[in-house]
Length: 467
Image 1: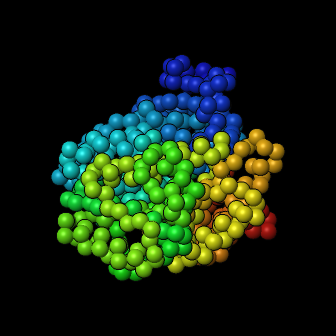
Image 2 (image 1 turned 135 degrees about the vertical axis):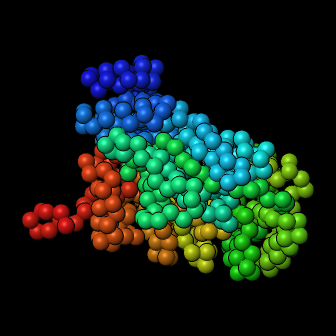
């Protein structure tokens, strides 16, 4: 095959994976969708990425960029047979500026590895997805990932100053800079969250955050999830914005406790993890505010971690939630919607009702502070008709979130999974505007085609000419 031959000549045989087993391994991400991979290539430099893009253009082959494969919306899964450019070998931390609190990093750098490397400098990378032990910075940028500690610090876009990327023509371009206020259009922000549809990220200038002088992590049990959600609303209404506010319902608490043994109260209807950072005085004041608000909702347990070890195990439980689901069923479908905090109780009630109506096993864990829901359905895909039933229920969950004034995604992205639901949020004019931006970067439609924007997003006149 000429395409494979050219790629092997460029990268060598060990960096071009086209054996059927390799193609099967790379055919899906952490979600439930699967695609056909022509080959998976593993470049080590931006120049190699650019050369791969030019080869793919000559052969008219679609390109799909991929990081660690932890995505959940099918963003790194080809819709049509495509060439996968796997960026995990671009994994160098190129430069750290301790004074300016920035770092140039490759897209293949593991999220948690970056924070560990700069920890001796008293710094960290604030976005912390639950998959941070495996997910890459490039993937975080592609989906504008969040995490438990993005409540106060903001999602990935707030921590990216510049992006180097390879265009659809095979050019290497940098947008943004170390300067905080760049004139002109903010193309850096356009790239963040674009899910590989505008270009392939090869280097990122990230903002590093100073480690807080003090921290307190609280675990609060409640008889009901409504009490936990009401406590979250009360905390925000008090004027306090904690570092994190996370809720797990009873089925999820039980699964996590069996898996991690973090000391979670399995008899509670829901558990709230709250974290406050700052000076010792402000942390102590924050703890008292949270305790006071929680006591209005009949908590069954109020605990403050006594040391770093207890704090670490509490967070290990939260960040192991999705792995813990393997005890319940062999497969899971995880959704990602956002609702106003004031609608948390209402939407959660409707999500439970949907699960009951479809007779599905439901577990819930979510970033309650910013209304980012993660309803999770545990199921066995080998059971006839089960996957279709799960997907039908998931669509209803999205619809009730949108009806409550919410959004399609808070951090997982749109990918292929939610592409055809974009019309629930965006008008034809909105979709057309986004499609025009995409065309400006990739007129040929080679970069991660059939993702994010549904078919027909571009408007045409009666004669078929694009408007």
